[in-house]
Structure formats: structure tokens, C-alpha cells
Length: 302
Image (cartoon, rainbow, N blue to C red; front, side, top):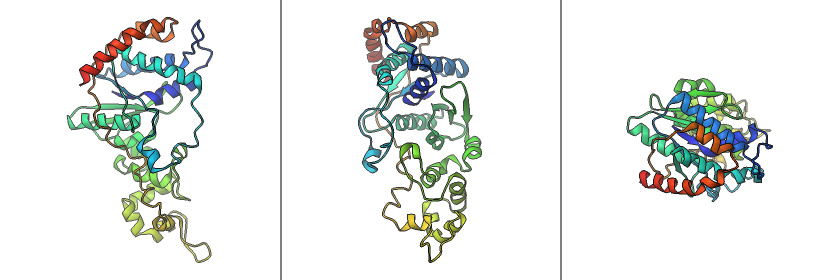
């Protein structure tokens, strides 16, 4: 099981009240919510191994490709930032693998590990609230557990058929579909006038971006942008002619291998103790032991 630590922690934070705190004033809503999520996931799916990936604070290669990538997002609340270290300690207390790679997002790390599991003939569950993970789905080896709502009280499992039912395209075509549609949450523009349904139709009719470019005029007609001399070229034709055409071609939200990721140690799940850790004001006492356990986990991962 491969868990997007940032995605689940954010959802836990916004799902639970911020008046959950220790006697010393440390807010613990995200820590407690994240713990509950892991408990439910382990109880319901009984994974052999678990790895939790986290984002790094440094810019990634996507920020270098597109300077405005995620630029519209608000600053992370301080009371959430203060809990991220505790969430990492929690993962260590579980005995799970934890990995983060400079220059890459947690998504890329999970994609690397999911692909490695597939190549070994193993099954991997990717747990995330990011729909870009749909591109990883590949029967029978890689499936996504997607959190549709805040928290993980409702998880939906996505295999290839479920992805196609949800998006209208196969997982292997999801990157092109997402590039056409755009992603406002990441501040990534799509093709003007092309939403989810139109993007799916273009992908299914023409395959990849080269096929769409080759049939730009006809594609604009299908996208509801009939070219005429008064309005100028349609939206897909403008994408074809514009200097940013290739950059919008999906590379920004395609997952790339994050080299050097560790293996997946088996979880040591002592649920009552971990739950007490998440809610207890004595969490600081565990930090020394947590660091020692983390060093052991890193050594085991290689």
C-alpha cells in the first residue's frame, strides 16, 4: 500500500475541528485524523507492506517548467505545518516506510514504487486524494483508493474500468485528457472551451496530441469551436500554433520516476498505542525513539 502523506494529512486537517489540542496547546486534529485513516486502511485492506510518501518544501521540476505552477494556492496554515513533523513521527511509530525526494512530489515517488511493484508482479494500492493518480492504474497490478470527500470515510477503488467510467478515457490516456481539460487546482490551464467530456471525446477520436494537432480544424468543430474568419482559429488550432503547445501536452502532470526510493518494510501495527500517541500530550517523549526507529527503517530500506 502506497500512501500520499500530504494529501491525506491535508484532508484530515480540514475535516476535523482545530480545537482538538493537547494540554500544552499543540493542535492535533490532522495527526489524529491521519491516524484514523491509517487504522481504517490497514483494518480494511490488510496490506503486507506500507510506504508513506511526503512532499518536500523545495521547488520541483514542475515549478521549473511552469513558473505559475500552484502559484494561486494559499499558504499552508501554521497549525497544519506544526503537525507535519508529528505525522512523520507517527509513520515511524507504525513501522512503515517513509520517503521524500528533493525535486519531486510525493506523487512521483508513489508512481515509482507502484511501477516497481507492477514490474515484480505484485499488487499495489495507491491511496490519495489526487485524481492524477488515475494514470497509474493498470489491471491487475495497480489500483487507486481515492478519497472523494474530506477525510477517508468514503473511499472508492479505481481499476481500469472505473477510471474509464469516471473520466471517459483509459488510464493510459489520462495525461493527455488532463492536459486538454486543465487543472485549476494546480494553476495549469487547459484548452479554452474544452472541458472533461470534450477532452475525452478528442482523446478517444484522435488518440494522442499529435493526432489532435493533425486534425486541429475538425477537432475544434467537435469541441464546439467551429472556426470562422470573424473569430479566428479555434481553441485547439490556437494550441497547435501557439508556443506553449507542447508544454501543455501533459508533461507537467505526468508522473516521473523519483530515483533512489526505498523498499517497503512490513508495518508494525500496534493500533491502540499509536492512537494514544496521536492524541496524547506526551508525544514529545517519543521523538527520540522515533528518530532511532526511523534510522533503522532507512537502513532496512537500503
